[in-house]
Image 1: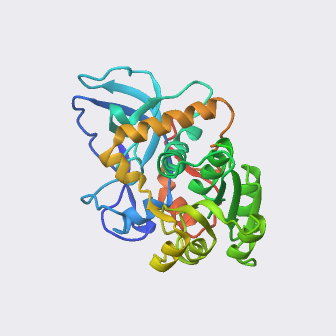
Image 2: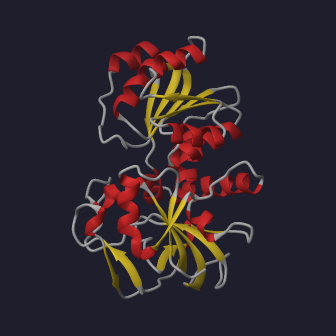
Length: 327
């Protein structure tokens, strides 16, 4: 089968497309003929050897796919050949076929196309785990989302609105702020021209944000620790800015706030059922019309390196998926 391979640690340009042998199917696993693969910022970290774990070389990046079940292993229940599904993976999704544990696979309805399904599980699973499982966001809370025009940020805006929060989205461009507004943000902050802390204080009449979701790090985190509400929560999702900030313990003390990590990949490795439950609930919200996961850009699988380079350089806004050419 054809797959995009990382054979050395480096930039997206080092990726190659080759024919490889399909993985053998074991008990409890499902073989999926991939139609689309989701692309994420974490893929760039993975192939650079900077992610939370390092697969053995060579490997295919990609944490999420959609497609059709081709075969099921012994002991698999609730899935059968021909089912339309989405799946989450520790890596390996940039390929024409993948093998996934059945616990990581969910059926999708005919109303959801494969590109949309491939854009769904990581972003919305992360948003759900962060806001529901970790922060317990509730109706009436103020949610501040950094990078609100990106994959996880956009999903967090939608999930926050569905949970009844007032949502403030930050971004560095007019385009990203427009995306945040289109997906439900009540207010937006252009942090290239506005001070995040001052605007949050103004919008909340001095209270601050009850929950802050931060996939950016750097200066965004520094602002967060100064505008989080008393007994508020800051969720550390990632460091898209490239700068990992230090947590000022005195500010944590003064504001009596919590700074929480939220590693989707860690949950997938340690608590896959928790990831499954989060994804399943957000799928229900999608069917109700509360979420809009449609991807913004689609590239052929063979152009994965080019697409990943454009995404890393922030030349693309929204969610990017790779098409395996089966549609």
